[in-house]
Image (cartoon, rainbow, N blue to C red; front, side, top):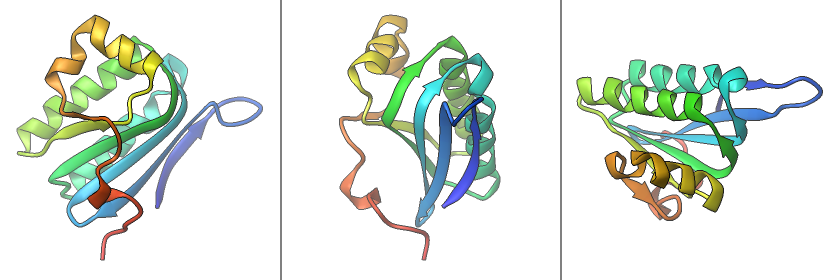
Length: 126
């Protein structure tokens, strides 16, 4: 796994880990994604695209909170990915984060999986 960082004072409030399954980058996020902690996610998405990801799936299973800054990082990442012929998709949106995506209408522009697709669970790039 590639760690793109943690952000927080006394302990990580937000973490990002990237692992690969073929040409798909699985970006696992955990904690609270807000203005003060969004940079590691931006770096992870940009880094995956630079490494030739054809698809980026953001695993939100452990994401407790996402504010407008986090949403904008994901939307910008989606646009950046489209320019390269790639995609940014979401998996395992919890009720709190999922509700924010529904209210803002952002859920409609992403492919969203109820859970991480089985073919991506637990594998690394060969």
